[in-house]
Amino acid sequence: MPAFIPRQITDNILSRLHSGKAIIIFGPRQSGKTTLLNNLSQHLEKILYLNCDDAQDRQALENQSLSHLKSVVGTYKSLLIDEAQRMSGIGLSLKILVDNMPQLQIIATGSSSFELSNQVSEPLTGRKYEYLLLPMAFQELLAHHGGFNENKELSRRLVFGTYPDIINNPGQEAELLNLLAGSYLFKDVFSFQDLRRPELLESILRALALQISSEVSYTELAQLAGTNHVTIQRYIQLLEAAFIIFRLPNYSTNQRNEIKRSRKIYFWDNGIRNSLINDFRDLENRNDIGSLWENYLVSER
Image 1: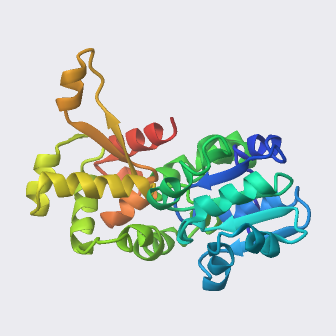
Image 2: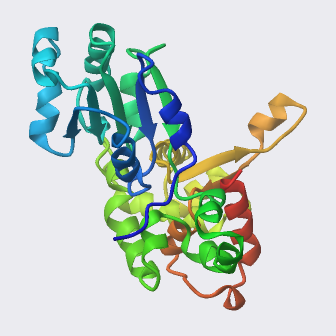
């Protein structure tokens, strides 16, 4: 069984347990949210666990009458909800529980901020703490493996990234990354409402992967992908909301110029970027070492 690597946000979350507020943990799929949830459960009592990938578990909280929700929770003192973005109306259900059962500690995780954040932001205003769980940070790996051992792995981190499954399965990195990128990571994006052109999304992602460390022009991306500026902007927003990429705007003392100028777009994980261009060569055989270092360091900021 892979060793549990402590996450930096754990102590902060533990300090806020039993404060009368819900705890919401966002992050990409396979970033370790369920593992963290299981670890946090060791500090809780009488736990009801719901996985909203399961239809029956979703239905348990979709009836938002107070009497029904109380019957579901019963005498449990803790409610853990995994993949909460899959449940319609999750924000209102959690609001009702927080307001009427303050002794109940709620922890919910979600891999899709465009669904979960939109659902919980207004109903849970002033009733929640939010945390972001990304792939493993250097400081987390350093604390677990020690400086000597972790520094030896830096070249591999630049190529394969730091998703927990990748860290825990040396020798299987390429296979697991291709599975992660192809099957899991983009699931929320592909299934989102009226997204009808997965091939366009793949084209945009590949173009972005080839341009890390360079300024990105939406107009140029639109020409490369055979679409328009508005579509490019929408797809990039979805990819950001699924925690696959993030934008870093240029800095200018003139705000008007700052808005007009191109931005740099980075991937939250080097391994996902390399999977998209199918390039897992060792550093000494690559011509994008500088770009890999820049992406790694900026994502660690």
